[in-house]
Length: 171
View (cartoon, rainbow, N blue to C red):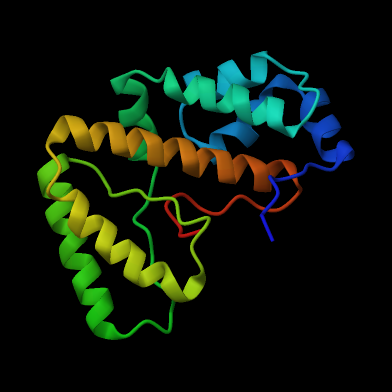
């Protein structure tokens, strides 16, 4: 059965649309810590539906400048492993993170919204190892896309009344 896109209860969208500018801005900053992005998305309220809100968030994310991306990345934390992951996985992930941060100068970000919990560890480790081979410009593009995807998932959860996960947490 095909998956349907996210749906937003009318009350939640209504609350976001009618929230004070400061409240909307704070909510958006929990999704992506870029004041420019948050301001742009908040300033275009009201949104008629969730797809319109997500389209505006995507467009604003695509327009982020390198300084905006750096600011958003600085607020991200490393993706974490489940508590029951074996210790070798924690060691491997810590080493991969250190190598990544040394190479690119920022934390590794990845959106795992569409990954089952049982596959998250393998996907995370494979992605970080694969992306270590990227040249810095290619990795900047991939990182910007992952931040956009993270922001989109967090925005869906935030506007549906569920807490947006902490930055960098696997989804």
